[in-house]
Image (cartoon, rainbow, N blue to C red; front, side, top):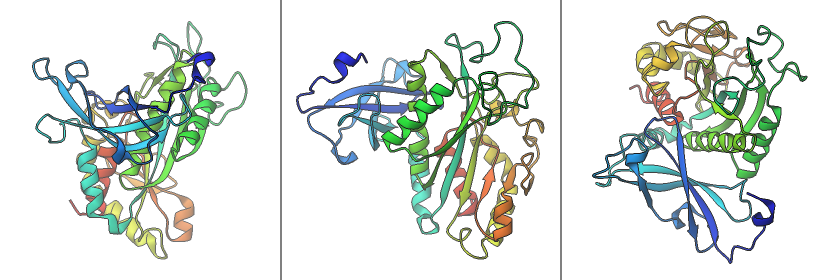
Length: 352
């Protein structure tokens, strides 16, 4: 927004930007509603609707899909009292829309609230030129040098797109997203940021809003954000959404016993987890989880201490301390965090 308009008085009203997940299960949509007064609680916001036939969520003959606000954040783009509103999708019969993964996730989290599941998600992504065809900063013809100097790199010849990363970080802090850190990744133009720790359903809310903010920030730079799990084929790292998990029992003395029990339970549900870890029931992850480039094979479950080639990694410090958390390295970068966290909790907390 041009600066000369951004500071105009809003006559006591605010702009609420409603955000929802579309029919792809991985893309966000959004539109703005004027609200007559500043909002302190999500309960003050009205239900709204959109044309689902344009988002792959309904037909033109019965196009209305309803969106219900579930969480609010400060708007880092409009600032002031304006807000971002994360929403759930509902069908006309008042049931959760088939694309709504949050409703089930919330029910699962409520059933095991006493175990206080905490999550921290490491979101990897790749920056592309505005055409979406070439990674940002890569040569027009050919490829950059092989992987090695780019991870946590410093310098013009090693890092591409830092301005986007820094702007995203500040915008998340302003919004109230629980962003915990960021770093350049192994493939040039690939980055990671971490969100958490978040308890229960809030993990999905915060990660989805952080993705919205990232794509919105990238607009300002004419850069495209890709969450594709394997954006460049060949000898390049893919992109994941590594999910760190702990329960109250795991975070206390003797917690390693509970961690190993959880991993054992997950070993018996490998296929069920893979089916929930990308929007295409494992098809996207099949390009990434090859057993190479710091991944385990999609066909085999494995775990190990400090092993980034395993399905599940136990941090070295946790083994040393005797308690802590573990990391599921299988979720793809384009996963739905509601589906991922629900599946993990079903397995390790509810035995389902």
